[in-house]
Image (cartoon, rainbow over all chains, first blue to last red; front, side, top):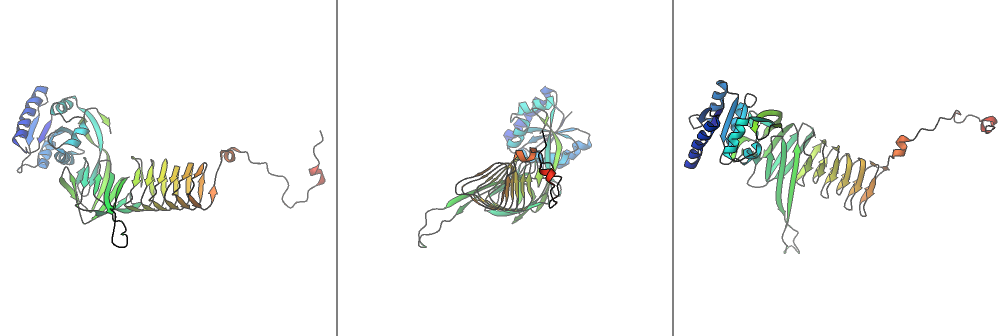
Length: 241
Length: 138
């Protein structure tokens, strides 16, 4: 039997969606215990409760940030099921559907895929892509596997669950003025970098938040560590990814 | 850094120091001070400046490299490329405008398969008997 944790509904429509989901799960014969997160009962508390009750599969019902948060609590202790609702594009791509009914059917078939994750010190988890987007060009310094040091100026930095670091920047280079007076436009310099490693240390100026689906997960400075094949998730097709 | 992920790209706005090692392709458009090593291809872009050895199967240079380059298959120096250091490769292409200052070594397959010549029984400086120079009688 599954243990479902639902994200606090953001609207009446979502509340109605949850009711339809309950009916759907019952009709599929996989209606387990259903808990709704709230300010009084955090997702973390509910996930811990599910683990204490001996559930081996915990299903996160909600958006990407919520799914990542449940994954952080249950990693290494239970299988993660996902029913993407709301802003859940990454979760939907990961399991292979953004349709609630199809996702529920995947739960019934229970095909498992194993995924890498990244631990962000001290105890945050990056399972879905995490992003830093400073309001203006910022500087990031990094050390990869203790062997490679560097820095970059960036507008966007993405950390994936495979500990790939993608650094993007775009800035305008002012042209030299003719006779100190006239200039003719500038040149936009775009830069895209990609690194990967097992242990990465990031320091930024100023300190910046890393967000998943718009919600802060952790702040710089921080150390990221790859956890290979660390999370089992129910997906369309079981495999090691 | 030694990994087997999707490859490494060092953008224009990036400066690195240390060993950049990847089992897949490496592309450099920024500054690297240290070793650049790939088991596949290494591309040094037009905006790149590398100070250190570069090793790869296929190495393409359009920027500036100050250091030894080893390409196990092919090394191509493009018209904007500048190399200050030694190069070692089986297949070298230098485009018009490319600058290369240094030593070049081109190991060939013949060298590796060629049998070493038998050592002479005569030590250098040793007087040679007349008999030694007489061809064998048929």
